[in-house]
Image 1 (cartoon, rainbow, N blue to C red):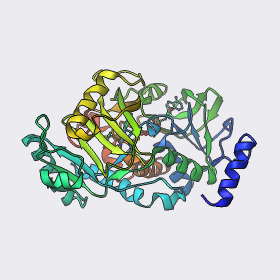
Image 2 (tube, protein in one colour):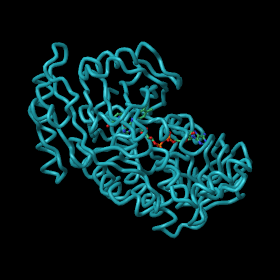
Image 3 (cartoon, helix red, strand yellow):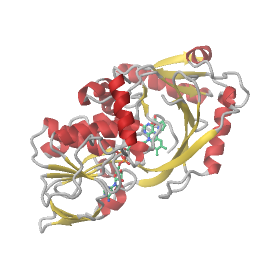
Image 4 (cartoon, helix red, strand yellow):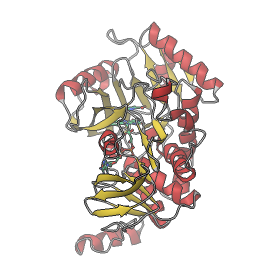
Length: 417
Ligand code: FAD
Ligand code: PYC
């Protein structure tokens, strides 16, 4: 911080922080009419609004958020970014996102702290090794970086890792060097600021409570906690609450909702250089720029809407982390939380049109949607604007659950769900 910055900080502290300018416009109430309304002010919804405003001439756009922007899964996730999925359709979708991550801070003129420090997925047995090697080959064929490391290679890449312990011996791992992490709330704030600058209304504390359809079945309006809004196009981007919101329009979704939990340790000096995931033991770990170890678990085993952390799940995960990284055994944990993830039966998202004219949906990212935020927003915006699926989004249509053209990414989804 330079001298001017320090002086401003002191002045604001002394006068009760009254001089800060908000980073984005956030009107208290919505307008009575919009051309497009996005339900959900998470990263995906805000990114959708940004690309709609920047790349498509669709008129007036609003993002309605029932709480505060980024307060859903966007602000609750462990920020792992990678594109090493098995099928070409998925590789195209997730790598589209990684390519956008690589230039996102410049695109938004906002530091989202994208840090491609490498994501290592550990193999503990022959089955893991076969599965990951298959992913490595498939990814390379699709032009996505991924490489197999033997156990010594894993240890060299991540020195805190104990590859010889008895319980979860490491036989190797798949490494995506372009993978990494970003700062989750900066992603929401960066998209919000850029979208608002292009004229998008971002209305917080505005819950959608009803969707109205006309005689032809098409959407015509929304009821919200801040009044009625007329609109002909609605994009539902309400992870965790998708089934509830879509039910307002009479659409039943092929989704199940589960809590997914994570926790952070006390902050320490930089000790952990990369991201490590172990699907087999349901644990993954990285270190934030604040110094906290960021640790996550698999989903709870039964559906619910509880966002509280549960000791039983977290203690299982911490036991596994302590086996893999014995040097962390004496670390103290600071806090834990959960977020509600919408999961599909093939562990792939749903992006596109719905049976209701004017109603579009983007959901089902399960435990892994943060990594897709820019790509998801980009292709969903094009889908809403044109009224037909963007080519990258086309395989992820809702009707694949009727046609049977599923994209089974259970192994690549990594965190069990
Ligand atoms: P959200 O950020 O949840 O946004 C949806 C918004 O809709 C919410 O803000 C909600 O308040 C709002 N909303 C809902 N109903 C209404 C309504 N009726 N009216 C108005 N607004 C409404 N993904 C990864 O890729 N990597 C990870 O490392 C990772 N780790 C995770 C760890 C945890 C603990 C959790 C919970 C998730 C993790 N994920 C991860 C998944 C990822 O967080 C999500 O897939 C992603 O953030 C979804 O983004 P979104 O913008 O769609 O959802
Ligand atoms: O999708 O890579 C992922 C992930 C890691 C932790 C939670 N989700």
